Length: 445
Image (cartoon, rainbow, N blue to C red; front, top):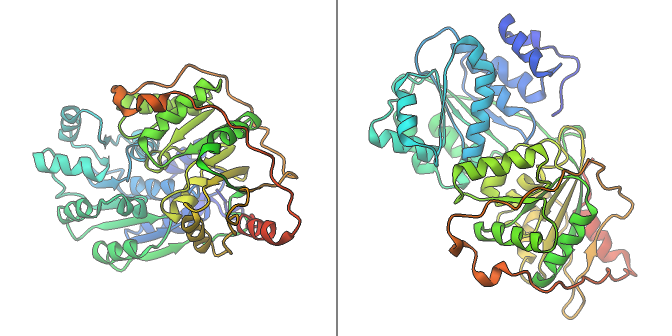
């Protein structure tokens, strides 16, 4: 998160009590998105914010909204989050800043007890943080009314729309008075986000944080053109070499468990996994164990991985190429944060992932790498001159929690396949292929 060294929190119009709380967080200067968003939000204006992951967006809406409503009694603030994990993290940030002022926060998420949430909502909390689906459940049951909401926050709006929450968002917006403040935060100004902004906002101020040499994550990226049957052995090779924490992304809930079992059978036991069908307590345990270092490796899908906020992930591995190009950016954004150097490896299957790789290249504005010719052995591209992360490796822990139903992982898939050693990459005589691959995965400094 890039801070503005020549700006002080004192310049943003915040109270002494709020400044004292901010000082306890350890941030000496506001980030760019905080410095630009907080003064506008304090005035009660609608604000549309586009800024990358890890730039400090959450504090940019939590601080001014708590400041505005800290002396009022009633449910005035509603923040919508795309996933349970993001909602929980947002709720924690609200708690840190709101609780000292006597403000109560209620988080409503799928997997939690409806009756307990109903009771909490009946206590007239000052702030509600919720996922769209769960909030609609409470609206249908008459557990909550939104007539008095004066500030509506769409956190990670692009992600909520990608996940298909458009109808729920419309339903919720209709329940809230039109005379309100609306804050919308997104990693991109995608067309769907712009359409939502036109419907839900009133002449919003725009805050666009452009990427700079300081804000662009320092990520050394590598691409492996590799057949499916060699993915596991290549993953093991990387995990054995990598001393720091690793985030492994797959495209299905079933594969998170299957891949964890395969790694455990191969002797890599400091691994856990997370997907949306696990019980809430299991998901929380997996995230907690990963953050604490009990497990060094976590396997996740895009939906669950987006909600895990860890600053020091050493390596992101795309075991499966993401289905959407934008998810590639979100995935690798787990590493190289807060000024640290990160690593990202992607396994692409020749003939299957060609279009997806080309789409990622187009999104990033670079030339797509050329896949191996028919009959040519798949090649790998890496940067042997780059040093791997020296982050301490977490202790090995117990096996990850098993899902409640064994049917989730077919029996055949639970047996580790015979390991196939991946041959060393063939020497490249011409710089044509390697040059293009490097051009694609070149770190933008």
